[in-house]
Length: 91
View (cartoon, rainbow, N blue to C red):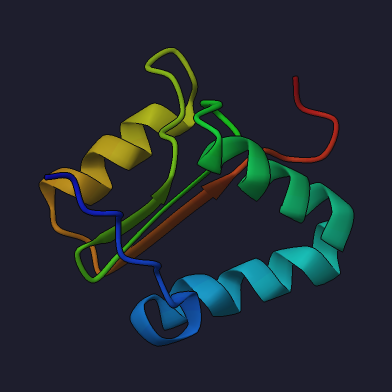
């Protein structure tokens, strides 16, 4: 029997990510950041991806994107926090 995935409490389980997202909302605008997160949660690559304390949120950037090397580094080295988001105006 399939069980629904547990809902992630971002502020509790990924506090560094939550803080970073809030800073990006101030820097790049709430609409842009929220759209990137929604897209990534829907499976769109290259919009938003965060790793923190064993939790992952979003969809990785594609292998041909400059962020892909940093994503790989974060995973291989068990980085405590890594966050990636598409810059405004990026395709």
